[in-house]
Length: 210
Image (cartoon, rainbow, N blue to C red; front, side, top):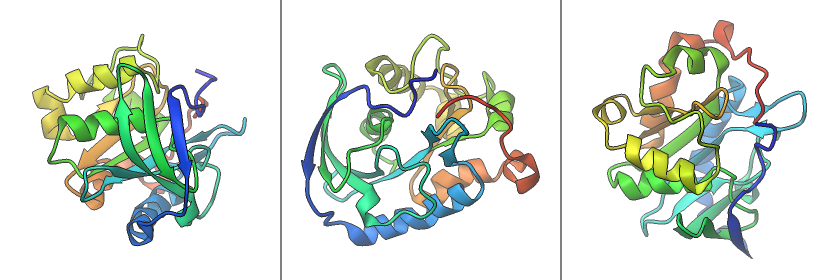
């Protein structure tokens, strides 16, 4: 899907300085670990992939901004706060120095469906994607990323025993794409990092976009 990395929802962006800089710094610690292992990054065609978020005390969430996958080290200007969203209308509102990631509705539906989840990561890794495809909760290959259909598909899958147990989703229609979630950033990231395929010798070899 060569249109990956582009925002498909109606984004109301209120540009302002980020008030949650300390939380952005915590996000950045884990984002850097994922970036260093090429689980967040950019493909040769210039399309970036991967994002990370965490729930805030007021039930909004902080997420890395759109088109940040190609940036080696993020700062607080690369994060934004999603304050509201509407799956049916395919829209969201974010406040910060940057627009929200193209995957923001996917993160939003996880937070809405699972109140115990406080962190979500989206990475790309070809070998792990192939290994887990249809072995853990897997979205329909007909459902495109960044769409209301994907959000609804994920909402359905999150209620399955497999998704509750493994806390990992495979995006069949989003080549190489995986999502993990947990009660905190460490749990969400380590649900993926614990797999041997994610050691340096097993880095993704796929050529899919985003």
